[in-house]
Amino acid sequence: MKLRLVNLRWLALGLCGLLAGRLHAAPLGTAFSYQGRLNEAGAPANGIYDVRFALWDAATNGTALGPALTNTALALTNGLFTAALDFGAGLFDGTARWLEIAVRTNGGAAFTTLAPRQPLARSPAPRRCASR
Image (cartoon, rainbow, N blue to C red; front, side):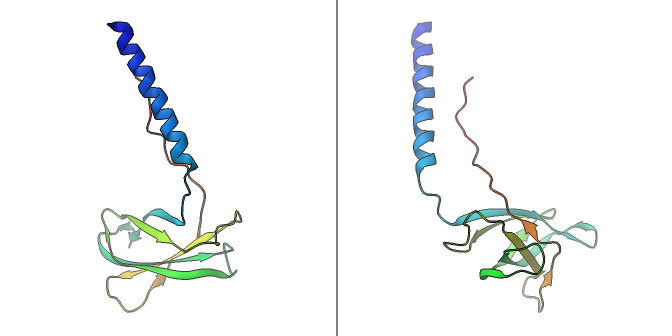
């Protein structure tokens, strides 16, 4: 009986490895998630904000790439937020990119641009297969 459980365990781990290999081979697309933290007056922001994201080719000055994206009515709790961004194809060619972020209260008149721009870095997805 013990031998059968061990064999099933190794079979499950083998299948997990095969599936992970297939998932990594699939095209990734152009969308990604950005997670940030916003403070207002020295404390974590809470409430609904409009957040605008622009992609740049330099930390300062430089050229804006692609369209600016605005996420309206983004909920912030304890200053934390997550935004889905998709600047389209062809902008991520391996060269460095920076994200410029501007915020306003939901429906407010003017955006406030935050400084400095945030460098973008690759981050692999975590593997979820594990042995016990």
